[in-house]
Amino acid sequence: MRRGFADLPLHHGKAPPWLFERMVKLSRSVVELIVLEHGKDKLLEWLSDPVWFQSLGCVLGFDWHSSGLTTTVCGAIKEALKDIGREVGVFAVGGKGRSALKTPEELARIGDLTGIDTEPLVEVSRKVAKVDNALIQDGYQIYHHTLFFTEEGLWAVIQQGMNEKTRYARIYHWFSASVGSFVEEPHKGIISSKVHGRIDLNLTAKESEGSRKAIACLLRDRELTVKEIEGVKILKLPERHHIKPEDLDLKGLRESLRKMEADIKDFEDILKVRGLGPKTLRALALVAEIVYGAEPSFRDPARYSFAHGGKDGHPYPVRREIYDITLETLKRAIERAKIGEREKVEAVKRLAKILTG
Image (cartoon, rainbow, N blue to C red; front, side, top):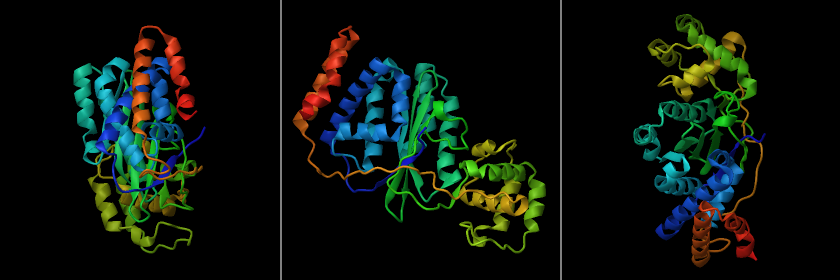
């Protein structure tokens, strides 16, 4: 199974209104058609595949396939699902910046309107954000979070983080059916155009299993841990470490542990703890190695790479007339498919060949 995320360079600019309007319409048709042909579960599975998602973005925006693709495509699909969500049984919440922070409110609103129990999804949303911001410390700060889900509770999450120094964005794809554990290799697929030799910390790596257990142990008996921390006076670390002695703020760590009220049974429980961020986890990982000899992983989870281009009209501008023909063709095909004329769906499958022929 492929695992990973995609790194894309940040470009300036945004989708013009005329293009986004068409992207919403085409998204609506594509979503309806996929659900008709393959079912809503397959739609979420494909959205969680970074390669398929990137391809969808190229279809919706043609040359609109820089990092702006993620936020724009997710936004277009979310807008489309506002109209057809109940009909197809798929919904979307979240988005970029402040919209991401409104995810719990949007889930509650959809729950009230549809009768779907969305409370478990609020917890899912928080866990996913915590993993990609705190457990994987790769230099990318999450600023986009979109959650897609079905009436039955299947879900997919697409998150994007930005590295301020390199100006690269990284996309994280999740699919509930592929998540055996939130804290060990949880992502659906891995694909990247920029793979780092080492990152600051990767507590989701399989090699970090010992570190995760040791950290959970430290948090289960916090009073004893505080005493252990007070005994740490001099740190002699091998040069391989990305965690440096100055990262270990003993006073701050002691205060954080004393304020913590959560009951920690295993490592995944820390995802529910508010205020336990990257800095505290880095310090705990270092203490866990000193006390238990459990070394954490600094491996970048990215594994594969692929080439991509820019936007801004290259290699060619969006051809509005063909886009509109595509929209109308898909609309007619869906209408026919709904009343049983399946040959129209087969015709749509040949649409790409017709357009490029």
